[in-house]
Image (cartoon, rainbow, N blue to C red):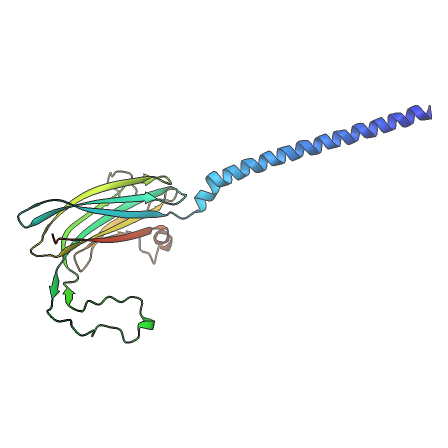
Length: 239
């Protein structure tokens, strides 16, 4: 009788242990699955949403033709989302500036050379010519996209890895200018953020700029979310 009872107890303990082991394994499998799901969601959704927006800008300039003294230049501006979060482009501004160089027979003295090079951020000195800076504005062009204006406008959103290009042709008189400078300004933000209203502003030098409509001192959060990228490249008008 005792032997039968002892065997029953051992069998009950073994069944209980196996049941506990089964429950532990089941919980481990469920935990691993839950962690896998969380990791997937974190990598696919949460982590990208925490990343700041990042874009790159490239401009390709080519001669598109000529007539008399005028040269046609085609500018292809490509903007690309190089980050992990979606990007909403709010506006862009182009400025094309004609620059003339004035040459001297003899190099000039380096009067513009900083006395202490160790405390300067940049140095640019030409010894036998000067440039007619800031130059002459030949073209200004700006676009506000959906979200940046109360008016109806096209949307310009890019997912990570996507790119879009925009062509522009400008005409320059090579008898008046030696080269032209193409300046591009982009304003953008994360796609999930609330749109920021923008406006155009004309600078004292005649160039077109993008500005937030909000007062940055009264609404600093709007200006903090707004990201800008400026890019410039130059094209010689010499044959």
